[in-house]
Length: 391
Image 1 (spheres, helix red, strand yellow):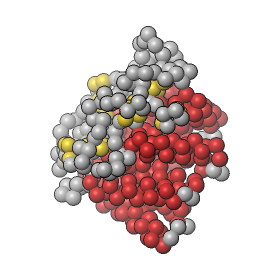
Image 2: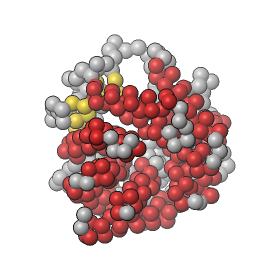
Image 3: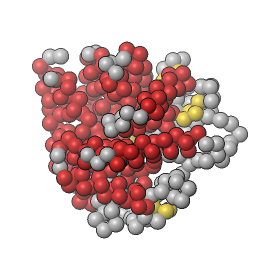
């Protein structure tokens, strides 16, 4: 790596650290943190105005995790208190009587909606684990493991989460998510179920979801990995693929750069870049069809905030794993694009939804799906990775 690259990476590191503590986290602490009922609001307009008091249960866990991670990295008690506020709100209000968490609740914690998946539980589990690490309270490590086992039980109980359909399918999202959830909890627990689930998920991704004939991971396949030749079955989500790639490389790193896992992770990242990077306009595109038909999702050619964040992280992991300069070039393109078009210079934080040409589609800073997670996680991960790469 030449000096120009080193200087560039150092500038990226400084930009992330500065933006995190002077822009992103202050925005959510000022406008999002509910100091009356606890937890965090995410339906926030461009200037910080609260648009809707409905709370995303995902984001109670997501911000609980991010705030604890930030407290651990920066030693800030305010971040740790914000994490605990989200965790207390989760425990007091976000579990229904059957043990399955809500998707959204009112500001004071009354259930609004449930969905047929376990992502609320996944994010609550990583919040418990990261808070345990940051605070030293081991009871939350135990809660994280208990919740992880309950997640697996729900997934393996026929009919608990969803009605029976006339066909069976495997989903990429939950398969890759369980890798990261288990890996975060591994910081505070050596329960064997965590490594077992990591290995099982990686094996399933390689066996069922990786499709060399299309050069991609698919979002949905049959129970034995069968290709489902429908619009849904042909869907490629490049952002998810980037996220999966770095989740696997994070495991490889913990295992002394296991060569099989490096191969799997970097292959997925290479595929995601090929399908996702928009060479004319820059940025990672939302959806592609593996047969190059028109994707059915109406946002297919938009640029959302989170795939850019995951690409920035994934490319650094891939460089760290291989030393291949192409990943630094990938990182530079992704970083420059994201930090050029997404930050709101007038009101702070990032826009979430851009048209393909990079113009703003809608300026709100949050809703039930966008909030303080992908951006601050990226701004915490990137400096740590660059520290390791440069030192």
